[in-house]
Image 1 (cartoon, rainbow, N blue to C red):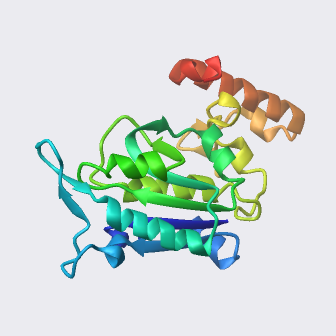
Image 2 (cartoon, one colour; image 1 turned 120 degrees about the horizontal axis):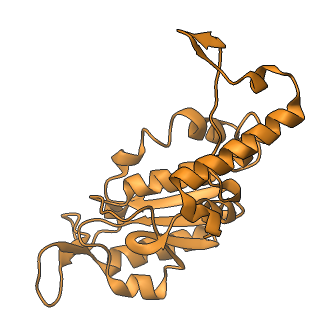
Length: 226
């Protein structure tokens, strides 16, 4: 998978995309991530990529020209399956969407900043608008890191255990069951006996029951299949 990211603060993406599982994915050649500094396509020698909004009001807006130049130049190198804009008013990012995006070959992500990007870029170039939650960040870089991490770990071969991602919370609209590790008795806190039984079928049944119960208690909305 190839992911290109347009940002005006690319430094914010250096750490989350170059360590842990994302680093492993890149080292294996399963995920290629390229971050582009938007100021490369600035409208003047001062590196301007934003301007005041028409009609007045607080906050700057990312301009059409730098974004269009960046998109067109990158499109000459690759045909993107999705051009994604990260914005608070986009579709809420959920596991189902992550699963779908993990099947794509090439994606371009635009990180907004200030008051966002000129609407005309959204109308003419963006194919998918995504929000990672009902709150506002200073910019789209942290949201981009969330999206790339969530999608990247689903690529076959990225995780050492191929079944691990399939048992995560939100797969099949259920939260993950409780998990335990050694020792079996810590300060008198004992793990459920079923986990020591060696009966894999009964353990899986117990885990499923725990997932259902935990989802009922904490996120009953997920059981509606939304």
